[in-house]
Length: 298
Image (cartoon, rainbow, N blue to C red; front, side):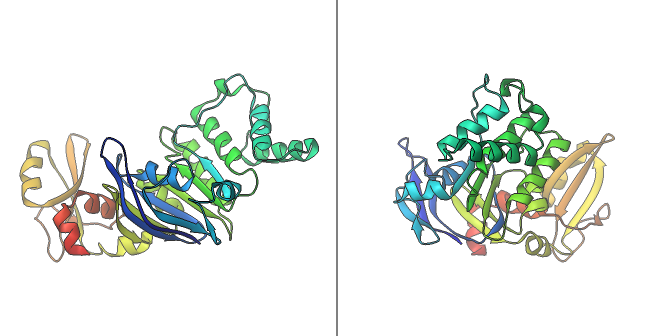
């Protein structure tokens, strides 16, 4: 288990990125959801030993990841939000280079490892291609391949599917699912709710540097049972409905606005029909609440 206890981080410009963040993360896929600027990347960089916290601890299998960065890096596979590659190297050369950095010195062992990783991420046919010509999806698959070198116990991926087309997103989802073994913690940090809904057995929501919820995707959905309503209305009605109801999403389709509304206990209006809640409803409802409303929930 990965134990994060009361992590706090304030940058030199006085922006407090993390406020006593605590999480217990068991092996498997864990989703960290939050809007841009919520503190996700700061938290991931601290866990990945790239930033030091002002206070707090991180422990996994008895190792203090803050004080023992050397041991932490032996346990870690990391795919950051901005993953830099040497554009003139081929996929094969890139993984060979990362394998050396991770201590795989035997040439035969390294060759076998690189071949297995390229096969695993479906890049065998592109092994001789320079990575500067890779698509976004191919770059992300190469990124997860380097993160898997050394069979890490902790894998961190930060906003991995942003900008990917639907086919590449599904392919990347499958790769992440396969990487989460019985003894491996995989943390998926993202603002894309469907990624967490499709992949993760546990999740946390972070906002303004604070963890405001931890639960399973199903328990989050269950909290909104019989409380989500939808309606298709003319565009000019949107403002009035937003003033009257708790509107959590608006999408335009066919010249009409499709509204999703949370109303517990009663139908919000004649134009609304009940609909099944989704994780997106829970998330958008939670991050849109005022600080006072969140405080009253705790």
